[in-house]
Image (cartoon, rainbow, N blue to C red; front, side):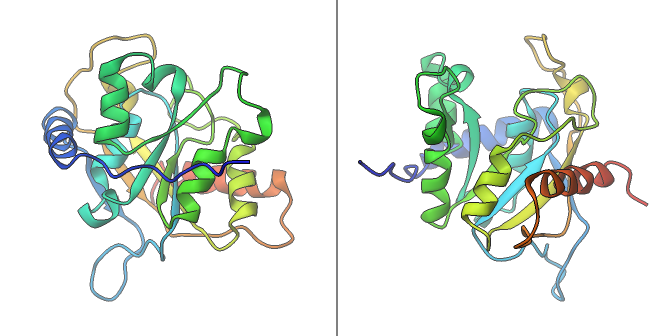
Length: 219
């Protein structure tokens, strides 16, 4: 069976143009709750899986734009093929701007192979942006996380998982809206964690969801 290749590098000019546009529209302001001695964010060693609440189509762009430049270049958003591959413009943004890995949710890909593009990225040492709810929620509190995150973490137990809480993205582009409203959108990054060797699927997903939710109400 042919192994799925890792994502190709993004086009530098496309990525830069996309970053400028996102910063102009949404500001994309990051904050970090965990820092090392130099004051830089402590996100653990690569590869990483950034997980966040999901309420808007601008979530991916906001989180991607909030990453430090060196991390952004080697981080691949996990996105739905049916949306980001629906036309040439979205596909170009996803593949040449964001360096995304597109997952086929149509049912044509065998269930056990759907995560192959994400697995290939992690094997190549690349990081991922993942929305474990699987679809956009109605409010800012994340709903139940689906099993994809668990399967990736179990297959790569040393991967660092970074919880992120996205703020204001739902107000900028609510579900069902076509045009975004320019607002300051934020991403609050928590400390990295890993799956525990004896952790069940439900316990792991509940813990991951709790860590994301807690970042929405910082003390």
